[in-house]
Amino acid sequence: MVQHDKLQQTLMHLFMILLVLCCILPFLLMVIASFTEEATLTRNGYSFFPEALSLETYRYIIRSAGTIFRGYLMTIIVTVIGTGCNLLLTVLFAYPLSRKDLPYRGILSFFLFFTMLFNGGLVPTYMMYANTFHIKNTVFALIIPSLMMNAFYVIMMRSFFSSSIPDSLIEAAKLDGASEMKILGRVILPLSKPMVVTLVLMVGLGYWNDWMNGLYYVTEQKLFTIQMILNNMINNIEFLTRNASMLGTAASNMKIPQVGIRMGIAVIAVLPILVIYPFLQKYFVKGIVIGGVKG
Amino acid sequence: MSNGKRRKAAPYKKNGFFGNLWGHRELYLMMLPGIIYLLINNYLPIGGLSLAFKKYDYSKGILGSEWNGMSNFKFLFSTKDAMMIIRNTLGYNFVFIVFGTIFAVAVAIILNEIRANVPKKIYQVFILIPYLVSMVVVSYIAFAFLSTDNGFINNSILHERINWYMTPKYWPFILTFVNLWKSFGYNSIIYYATVIGIDTSLYEAAVVDGTNRWQRIWNVTLPGLRPTIITMTLLAVGRVFYSDFGLFYQVPMNSGMLYDVTTTIDVYVYKGLIILNDVGRSAAAGFFQSVCGFILVLTANFVVTKVDKENALF
Image (cartoon, rainbow over all chains, first blue to last red; front, side, top):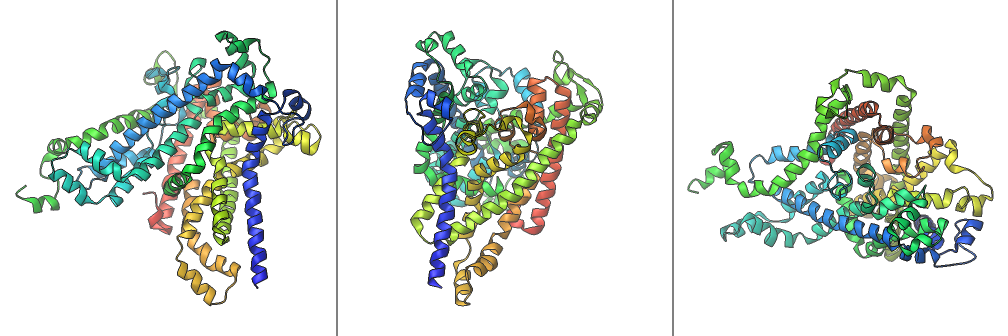
C-alpha cells in the first residue's frame, strides 16, 4: 500500500515535470535561437543544441537602436500611462459603487455590467475611433480603445471595497470632516494595497502585450510598440532595414541576421514579464482566481 | 440629521432626483470619468450596429449612409464564407471547451494530490507562464517549431520538409494544441483554488472509511469541483460566437492557404473591414456575432442560476 502510494506520487511528479517542460522549452528554444550564429541557423534550423553560438542578433538590435529601442520606449510609455489611467478610472468608479448609501447605485451597476454582456464589436468601434475621433496614428490609439477600463476589474475592486473595508471606518472619517476624495486616498486605498497591485499587474500585462489597437489604428512606424514591430516583422524582415535606412543609423549598412533576429526581438519583448513574474506570482494568481470564474 | 432613523429606512427618496445628485455630488463626480469612458468606448458603438443595415458611404459616415435593409446579410449568407466562419468559430470553441476543461481539471486534481509542498509551488509558477505572453510572441514560438526552412520540427525531428503553413489539414490540431498550451495553466489555477477550498474533513472521513485515492477523487474532489466546472463551462458556452483573434490570425501567420480552417468570425470581420474594405459584409457578420453572443450569454446565465445561483454572473 505504501509502495503503491509512492509510485503514484512519483508518477504525478513526472506528469507535472513533463507539463512544466512543455511550458518552458518553447521559450528556451526561442532564447537559444537568438544566441545562435546565423549561418548555423540557416543550415540546421532553430535547435536546442546549436553548433555555434553568437551575439550577432543582439549586436544588431543594439546597433539598430532607432527602431527597436524606440519600440521598447513606446511600449513602456503606453503601459505606464495606460495602466495609470485605468487604475484611476477603475478606483474612482468602484469606490462610489461600493458605498451602500449611494443613490441610483443599482442603475449605475447595471450601466457598468451591461458592457460585459453586449457590445458593438469591431466595425462600429473602429469607425467611431477612426472616423469620428480621428484617433488613427496617434498615441491615444494605443491607450484609449478597449483597454482603459474593464468592467470585470471594476467589479473586482468594488467587491473588495465593500467586503473588506468596514463602513464604520468611512463613517469615522466623515465625522472628522474628510472629503470623499480624502477618504478614498487616505483610508481606503492604503487598506487595499494587495488588490491595487493585482489590478496594476493584470492591466499592465494587458497593455504590454497589446498588439490589436496597434493593428487597427496605427500604421505610422514611429508609434510602433515592440509587439507591433514583431507583428510587422514576421513576414517582412525588410521592414527593419527600410526603417533603419530611413533613420540613417549605423544599422543600415549592417547585414540583418534574418533568421535569428525574429527570436531576438521576441525574447526582448517577453523578458521583462518573465523577470518580474516569479516575484509577483501570488498577485497574478489572485487576479486570475478572483477574476477567473466571473471573467 | 434630526430624522436620522427615517433616513436609513428610505435613504434618498425624499430629496428628489437633483437633490440626490447634489447631495452626493462628490461621489458622482468621481464616477464621471468612468461613465464618460464607458459611454464612448462601449455604448456609442452599439448605435453603430445599425451599419449592418446600411450601405456604408465613407463621405457620409454611419449616420448619413443610406439604409439598404437586409441586403448586407443576404450578401453575406449567399457566400459559402458565412457557413465556414460560423462552423469554424463554433467548432473550435466546442473542442477548446471539452479538451480545455478535462485537461485543466486533471491538472488541478493532480496538483492537489501531490504532497510535497515546494515542488507543488514550483509547478504552479511554471504552468502559468504561457498565459503571460502575447499571441504575437506565441506565433513566433510556433514559427520556430513549424517554419519550413528553419523550423525545429522539420530540421531536428522529422528531417523532411513539410510545408506546415500551406497545409490546412494540420491546423485544427495545431490550433487546438496552442490554445490548450496557452490557457491550461490559467484554468488549472482556477480549478485548483476551488479544490483547496473543499472541506478537509470530507477527505478525513473518506480516509477513515478506508477509501483509496481514486474513490476519494471521484467521491469528494469531483463533486466539490462540479459547481465551478459547470459555471466555467456555461460562461465559455456564452462566448462561443467569439474567438481569440490572435490565435486564429497571428499563429497561422495569416496564410491564405489556411483560410478555410483558420477564419473565424473575428478574423473575417477584421479582414473585411481593414484589408478588403468590404464594410457591409463585415458589419453584417459583426452584428450577427454581437446579437447571437448576447442571446447566448443570457441563456447561459439563466442556466447557471438554475444550477448554482451563487456563481451566476447576474
